[in-house]
Amino acid sequence: MAAVQYFIERFSVTCNKPVSHLQLACCPSHCAVPWQDKSIRIYENNNLEPPLELTGRHGEVSAMVFGTLRDRLVLCSASEDYVIVWDIDRCYRQIKEGVIASGRVVGTLLGKVEHLSLCPLSAKLAACSGSRVFLLNAEREDVLGVLKAHLGPVTASEFCQWDVNLLISISEDRTFKMLKLFFLSTAYPLLSLFFVEQNSQFIIGSGDGQLWCYTLPVDHKCRLVTKLDLSKLEQKHERNLRKTNTSASMRGTVETAKPVLKIWAQKLQSSNASLQQRGSCVWIGSSDGLYLLDLDTSELLMILPLKGDLSISLAGSWAVSNGLVGNMCCLVTSLFGTSVALFEVNSAGLDELCFRMAMGFSVDEQLSVVPSSPLMTISPLNAELAKHGRKPQRKIGWSLQNHTRTHFVAKKKKLFWIN
Image (cartoon, rainbow, N blue to C red; front, side, top):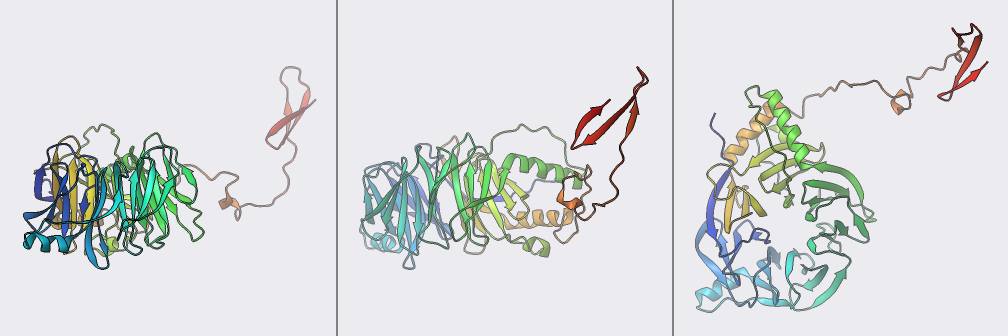
């Protein structure tokens, strides 16, 4: 059977230097790619020629993010000299009028900004530079505050979708900051953060493929719901596939770290009713492809590897957006090269994979699990099964050496010998 192509490559560009870990920007209509270090090219996802070029910087572009302000599409970009907010429609008009496109400077000399996040409801912009997070006004140059809580470089920060006054940041020092500092047991830096509004939860991913899911109640006292390992989930997923597909090859695999580069949510497009019932699904972008995870069951539903006739086989970063027609667009950088490519998830291949999943397992089916061992005596499941009978009688044993009678009493799992 021919391999299914899960990605359709829309275009690919080559930069003058590697941009593997750069924060790129992608939205349903546009994507942004750094060009010649100090410039930015804006491509329309459905009409790639000619791109809109934004210039005017003195430093190299280090982070970008799309967002909306007052119902206008804007691009926020950062370098060591400026943080600029570009009104995309206004820039297109300026180019048509023969004027160089210009943006609005909202931050100056903040250092190398590694990550940007925009809150459209409150018009706030969070810029991560070094071990600090600068909170900026997205409509004018005004530093609203500086958060200094981490010991290592801050890798990302995000605004809560249902509480605009809440910001969570993650760092290479393996901590995340909300109202107080939380330490996560991992030797790798924390790379990605995502809020799940449906369940009032947030997810953190690390460089070695670990995932932590926390609840976020009103009192902001977050509690750990589950901890997952992406590599182990993949191994379990492949074992289940081999059980349902006897023709699957038993090829050897080499265990490698799977960094969680990006986390986001998109409703699974499928006509299968059982799959549509899975509401809390998130996509995980790693170096070798995409992983669809069901948070309710901690089950890996599908894997979309970066294989086939693609210009990028190992990803350094992901920027993802829902397409205008319900598809999924992914702007991906090469891990070791200088390429940047825009991929569209192949809906036909995804439907075929959904059909295979539905044939192999359905959430409507009743799952029975046979325990491998009996219940422990202290298990609460034995509460209704416990019988109150007579106390056991004292057992009597005989010593074979001196033929003298010896009594022993078992009490509280200790043996007391009585001669």
